[in-house]
Length: 104
Image 1 (cartoon, helix red, strand yellow):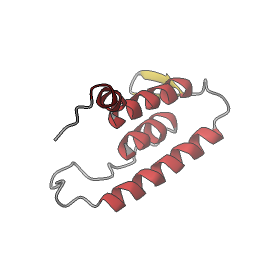
Image 2 (cartoon, one colour):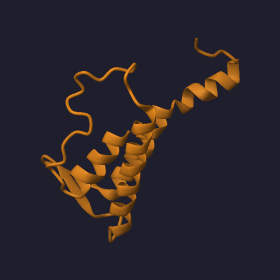
Image 3 (cartoon, helix red, strand yellow):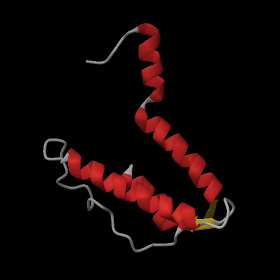
Image 4 (tube, helix red, strand yellow):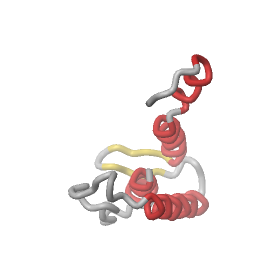
């Protein structure tokens, strides 16, 4: 989600097209060597940066672009809500409460 924050708010809305990926191309990244503390810290920094970009916006109607596509801040914020909902697995948590079945 840190990369998603950076992409939508930095690249698209703020026009920072030269920001490099945070973890390179993904080659060599494994769950066994991942540092959750580092990942959480990077995510918090990107969220704070996104918040600064949003705070500086004059309105929800300001736009940024990705190629030829134009996106408003309003669209990006709604999209981010959708992204976090999917990634957090809210539907799965609700299902677990209803039927009591959990994963292994």
